[in-house]
Image 1 (spheres, rainbow, N blue to C red):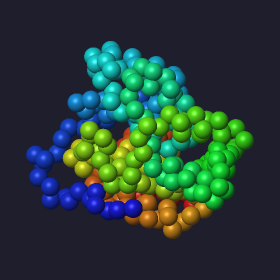
Image 2 (image 1 turned 90 degrees about the vertical axis):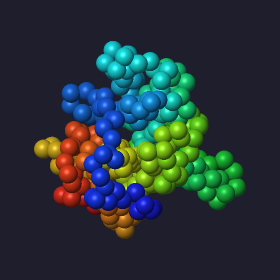
Image 3 (image 1 turned 45 degrees about the vertical axis):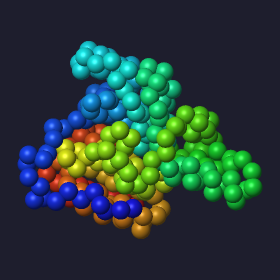
Length: 249
């Protein structure tokens, strides 16, 4: 991972832009879908088909825009609570789907090691961590979502046609987890890398690789962030939202 994202505190106020992120969720913030309201729209983690219907209503009746304005769908990771609505979202917008290039590399590595088609059950075993690790239930989801991905995103790069939004590899919760950061609006979309728990305290979700998780936390803390958008829970508005983050080892 690279720390080139750091936004110096000396930056002049007039270089900052208005925040662009809109949250689409239920009243319990069980799973958040985010909409980046740029010249063209970006959907981050379509969630369930219910999230997609709510998003469609929001775009048309609140923003007074069209789903045809969506030019990119980004997946922060491949867990089904964030990706089940991908096909419905793609049908509404025809926008390409983007995910971390780590997924492609995992599949290529498995194919090389096994000299044949990789098992998605084995891939899912690498990707799934924590309480959702029911590998026997998820391989069809992973296989379908993998086939829907059109663009593979590498660490540090800007999103296609949205250069102010930078990709940040954030392994820990899953190997392929990524965040999106805008150094001009000081917004961080973090998927399940960081969630907010009861009382709004941020929690960095981890795995068995403690060194990798510490590196992710160090990198995220190097960013100047005023708006933190988690995959689950309430967004946080704060000058330093990651200073007192709890860590799930």
